[in-house]
Amino acid sequence: MLVVSASLCFCGYGAIRLVGKASGHYGPGIAWQAAHLAGLAALALFVPVVLGLGRGLPRGPVRTGVLSVPLMGSAAAIIQFGIDIVFAVLAPDATRMTTLYRDFSAIPGVSAVVYTVGPQLFYAGLVLLVVLLVRVGRLPWWSAVVLVVSVLLSIVSLDLLPITSLGILGALLPAGRLSDEHTGPRTRIPDAELDPVPLEQHPGHA
Figure (cartoon, rainbow, N blue to C red):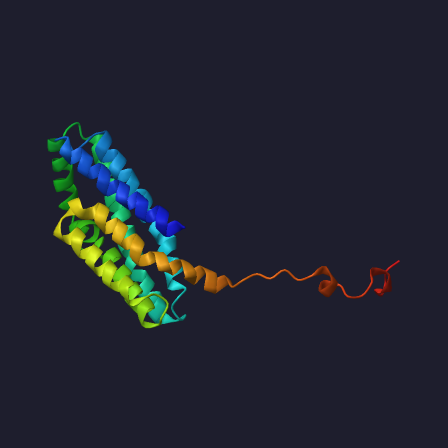
């Protein structure tokens, strides 16, 4: 399931980040790049996850509006992670990377869109989507509770991201049945029912 892959990649980002910080050097380097590549993969995988969750809501402008929030947040976060990766390649050390960030953030609108507001829309939109799915009976009530607590943990400290990712996984895992209900069971039709008339009796058969 995509939700499992996305959550595990997110967990990998948080775990690698912790290992890098524990080593005393988390900046331009292998740990930084590995963590951000895992985070980038998680964000990309969450796009189809969000779209899949949206199928549990009735079609209409409300669903479109709700889905646009986490998708915009994902886009902003993907840009942020991409910039982090590029700056880590360009900067020989943490000091130079800080300078690159400062110059980039000085561009009007960049700080809000890429750092302070934009990425947070992913969490806010995901919570809103899950709450609506609970309301229409497509997810259990505790999914919303687990998700909200998990998101709050990431706000308390980014060091709690591994726990946050596992909480997101637990909250969204029941959504797997949305796909099953959407497609429905497939029943094989016996050959006799497909063609009850002998072949030689079909009109035009030579």
